[in-house]
Every structure is written in C-alpha cells, then in structure tokens.
Amino acid sequence: MNTKRTLIVGNWKMHLTVAQSSLLAHRLHTVIAAHRDIEVVLAPNFLALQPLSLEIDRRRFRLAAQNAYFKDEGAYTGEVSFSLLSELVHYVIIGHSERRIYFEESLEMIRDKVAACVRNGITPILCVGETSAERKVGETKQVLHDQVVSALSNLTSEEVAGMVIAYEPVWAISTFGGELAKPDHVKGDIDFIRHQVAELYGSDTAKKVRVLYGGSVDDHIVSGYLELPGCDGTLVGGASLNYQKFGGIVEAAYRLNRKPKK
Ligand code: 13P
Image 1 (tube, rainbow, N blue to C red):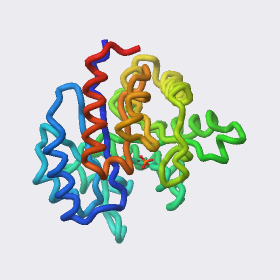
Image 2: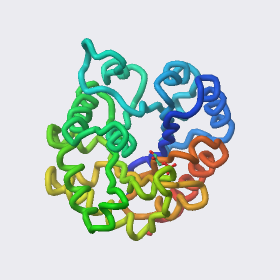
Image 3: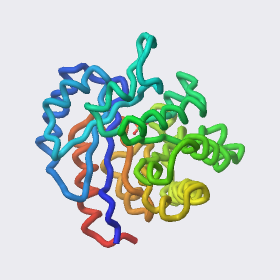
Image 4: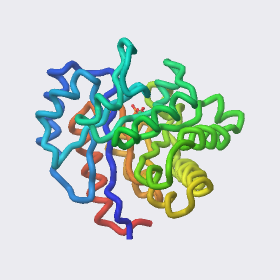
C-alpha cells in the first residue's frame, strides 16, 4: 500500500506582487479543501513568503522558497540563507533548471545548497532534468546520474529518504519549449532516478524518497503522470498561477487516490 501523501507543488516563479500572491492564495482556499492524503505546497517569491505564512491555513497549504544561499549567515549582500527561511517554510526548491541555466548554478553549489537545506531542518525539493540538446545526443541518463549523485553526496540515508526529487526535463517546461513528455518516458526516468538513489543508499531509502514530475503539467494531463507507479506528485509552474487549474490538479490527485494504482 502506498502510504505517502501525494505532493502537489506550485512554483509561482518570479510572478505576482505581494497583493496578487495573497489574492491567489485566497482563491486557492475557496477551491482546495484539506485532504489527508494530499500535501499542497505553494512557492511564491521571497517577498510574499512572510505575508502568506500569516494568511494561509496551515492544514491546507505549506510553503516553499524557490531558492536560498548555502552559507548560513555572513556578508553575502543580496542573498537569503536557509537558516533565515527555516521558521517560514517546509521546503526549498533547489537546482531548478532556471537556476542552473540562467544563474549558472554548478553541481557543487547545488550539493552545498542541499546540505545547507537539510542542516537547517528544511526539506529540499531537488530539481533534475536534461536539456533538449542533451536529450538529442542521448545523454539523459548521464545527466540525471551526475545531478543526482553529486547533489546527494553529503547526506545520510535518513536525510535522503526524507527529501524530494523533482524530475523536470528542461524541454518539457512551458517556458523552455513545453513539449509534452510522454508518461512512458517519464516513468523510465523516474525509475532511473530511484535506481541511482538505491545504488547509493539502498532500496529502502529509494522507496522512501519522493519523486515528482514537472513540465507543462495542467489539470487535463496531470493524471497521466500521477498514475505512474513511483510518481509521488507534481511540480507545477504556469498552471499554478491559475487557481482553477491548480485546484483542478489537486482534485485530480484526490480522485486518483481513490482508485487503485496501476
Ligand atoms: P511549467 O509547469 O510552466 O512547465 O513549469 C514547470 C516548472 O518549471 C516548475 O518548477
């Protein structure tokens, strides 16, 4: 029996003012009920995190930051550390492809961020995924291997078991082309990611780690991914800015959980 809660994460990226973020959260309250088997996480920009933390119903929503710096404190102008976030959020998204590509975050930096996240009692949502060019030359598995192995290298098996890995092929993200990934393809790559975790930390840890899929997911296609064995939820970008679509995704997850998994 699957005892994990389905994890639905809305990554609002660099969208929405504080007032617009509050309005979206308010609308989400009207369409999303608290479900014991589903965990809904909102990832607004840094400015909106504090006000939302006071406004949201904690039984229904948890918060994530979209990034943080790996040093705990010091003279790092412009950065926000995991320790500063630790009272505010349950999760931090680490190594999103937009961070890797636009901000040139290296494998080492992402490894240090994952370690800092865990050290501060926050659950990492580690994003991994190949670009279109890497996919075309058949490097997907090598890229996933390198991203997973390097990011987990300073952790214990308990720490890995508690974390989240989001498989987001870059070519499937709406703003990078948004080609729809076939669920069969996603299944193969999710299995591969778990296999990497099993190689490093054993099959028990691999079973426990939650693996999400992300890339142009909306309320119409989400079920095709959520019903894959081994897919524990989804990381949603564009559709999470629309309360009806995001509500529809949570609703789809709720309905699927009432059906036996394939
Ligand atoms: P889209 O759902 O807009 O493709 O974005 C995916 C993503 O990058 C979530 O982190």
